[in-house]
Amino acid sequence: MDRRFVLSLLLGAGGAALIGRPARAQTAKRRADPAVLVLDPGHGGHDPGAIGGSGTYEKDVVLAICRSIKQQLSGTRSIKVVLTRSEDEFLSLPRRVEIAHEADADLFVSIHADAAPTLAARGLSAYTRSERASDSFAGALAQRENAVDSLYGVDLRGTDKMTAAILLDLAKRHSHGASLTAKQRIVSGVRGKVMLLENPMRSANFAVLRSTMVPSVLVETGFLTNPKDEALLAEPRSRAVIAKSLADELAAIALEFQRA
Ligand SMILES: [Zn+2]
Image (cartoon, rainbow, N blue to C red; front, side):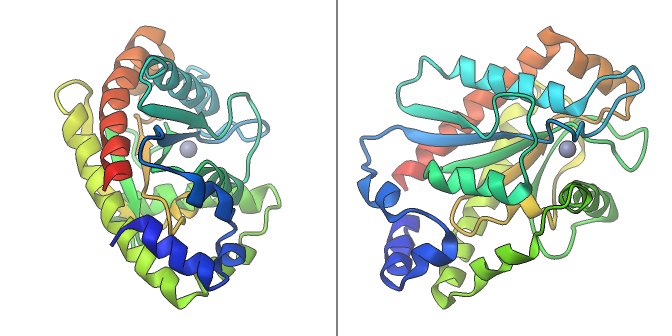
């Protein structure tokens, strides 16, 4: 079912308040408008994210990758790229989701380079949201990511209201299916260009992937706990390779979702 049709039902049912999304942004959007890709550089400000053994900060690496993707797609008129943050600032996880809603995103991708539960782990991997983690590795990553907000005093409980509407379940199923498609496409699109983690497609309960309306994927571009990954992620040229391979694939997926 079309995401926008579900949304119009929700808005009619007074769902706008529930999902915190302005009605105007949705109804005004036409197929001729560019597809909207929202990129979310993880962490920022007083939250550095992971810190590599040589002192590389996750918040800086992921911002650089997102900026590079945006720059690479700047000449593509069919795609509009919105960053949740363009500077070194702290954003709560619910605020990141809200920005995706405000931008009327066709695809939301949160970009990270976390500390892996094992030092040997390296390579790119992609995650969708599920109550139960696909494996303990993915579960540990989500736990660490979600802890950021409670550490810095943000209350996540209020956002549970979002799941109150019956119709929301419909939208949720739709966007979950699209998220799974996006995850598969991202991994197969970058395969051969960027090193992949073993079993690169996983799932866990990431709070930043909680949107019921926008297909959402979290990409770990690598792990700063691994010295080889840290060296790659700290190097602008290898970052550009990661950004380029992601840019091509993310643009194609966002366009496809917009037309669906
Ligand atoms: Zn992270």
